[in-house]
Length: 192
Image: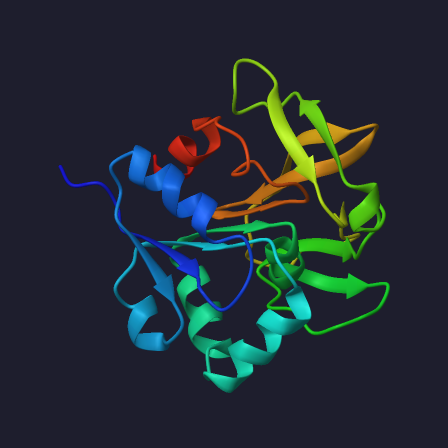
């Protein structure tokens, strides 16, 4: 059985580390920039980077509705800035988002670039702690009410009492990066 083709939103951000991990796992990757690219993959990473820059390119390449349609039937993983794109609501400051998962993203909650840090997180999808890199990371919080028809919102990890990793059906969102280390487990779970 062939492994799934993974797309990585390819406008800007932390793309190459994901490509290296998936290559190690024997999985083909495609940098997704157009609706045609999106039609060639069966799951998608919204990488860390600068969410406002990514939003500009999403609009420029008319990807807003294709991304929303794709997420309705495929697995999508928003990481750091990608979780901001995936969120239902964004604060500090407010900006548009794709509303793929019922969370609110509070931008730069964990501080500036100079305040970046690494933590060992207990994640219920993994048997032992995962090295998590918080780089200008958002706080992700569940919304008070869920969108009708969506699956339950699940919290998979916390950092110092704050939720840091959610899923809702096939949509994942985490405030931290895992692709900067050598741990392959979450990428393997993303493929399963």
